[in-house]
Structures are given as C-alpha cells and as structure tokens.
Image 1 (cartoon, helix red, strand yellow):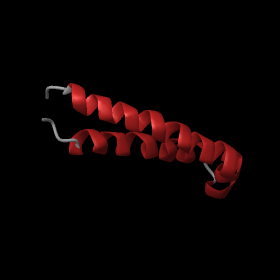
Image 2: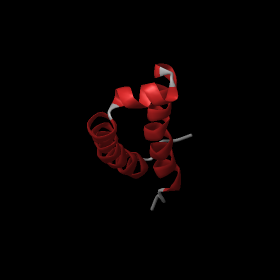
Image 3: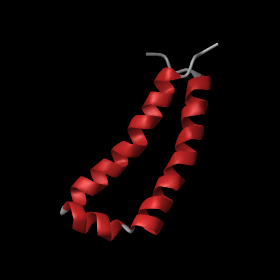
Length: 67
C-alpha cells in the first residue's frame, strides 16, 4: 500500500483537531475519573478513547479521494 501525501495531510489535520477536542471533553467536561468509576476499568476507558481517535483518523485516510 503506497501512502499518498494528500490523504496523509487530511488525516493529520483531522487528528490534530479531533484529539485536542476529545482531550478537552474527557478531561475537562466529563472528568476522566468519572468515566473510570462508571465503566469500572481504567484499561477499558483508555482503550475506548484511543480507538475513538485512531479509527476516525483511519476512516478519513481511507475515504479521502486522491486527485
């Protein structure tokens, strides 16, 4: 699989916008410890948050059209 510069650029822009927003929501608004208490597992919450960042970034890479 050959990486395309345009696709990487759009994925990186998405990642740089989505990651801080998610960090703000989780740490500032929802309080991370509250999520850990609710779900009962630090590893589960951490894995879910990582997937919420990685999977949409991969989707942006896959669905970006190369000219």
